[in-house]
Length: 326
View 1 (spheres, helix red, strand yellow):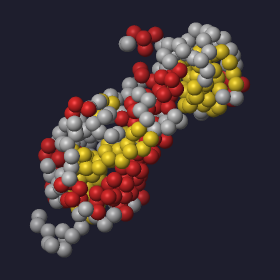
View 2 (cartoon, helix red, strand yellow; view 1 turned 90 degrees about the vertical axis):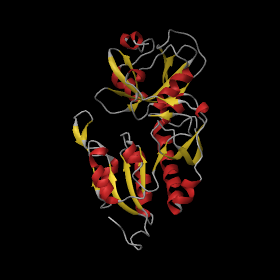
View 3 (tube, one colour; view 1 turned 30 degrees about the vertical axis):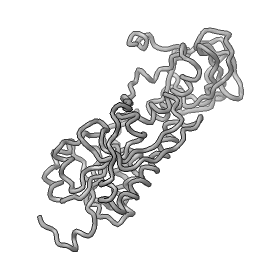
């Protein structure tokens, strides 16, 4: 369908995203002068302990803004409808589906994506968690023009942010989401100019952020204190680090580094203090400060000690199945 000159004045944008990380970018598009012709998000799915049907954060934001919303199982199933929209640009932020070549080539200006790392470092599914886990001091976002590779598209803009010693995946993710929205806002002012200045990535500098697995969430007390503290921060709020104490699953929400003490076997509780439950690692101690018994709410270490009879000398352990897969 041909559009008149007046109808072509506003950039026609399709947005695709699913988690809370994508919401600031969606809100940026909503506030801009573009015409947001459709919002795509993943279908409603069971989630949580009760397996209740859950709506994505992008769906909730789109509905609150009165936006046209689509939730196909496969984006290609909606190809004819997308063609009818005659989009100029497709903005994708953690949508959760791989885009086919037909989709990538459909918009006049192509498809752009906000990725939560400074590409080509940490291509893949879990860049925020892997950056914290690796001890990176700098992170950032990359706005790129999408191609059929795994986060291999040409770079349109990058914005850096430091990773602090107390950043979790939650705090860093919130910051990166806002930076991604900032980069997208700048692009929407003059999209053709930005896209025309895209810079190819250097594949020799690429690294990969594999998807997190449940097995990785187990704390291996034979690792260093630094490694375990980073893991706890990286895995908050999902999937959350965990261990076994007195035959009960204990989920660890936060922790701090302790001392260089070497006085017991790894995993042994060697003390209780205001900082938390002091646990021996292979090279020092770590203070577990916020914990959660399976099926209960997170509590301070002090509350857990009082209600769960935690004592020095008790030992955290890891399921044997974890070691069998290493």
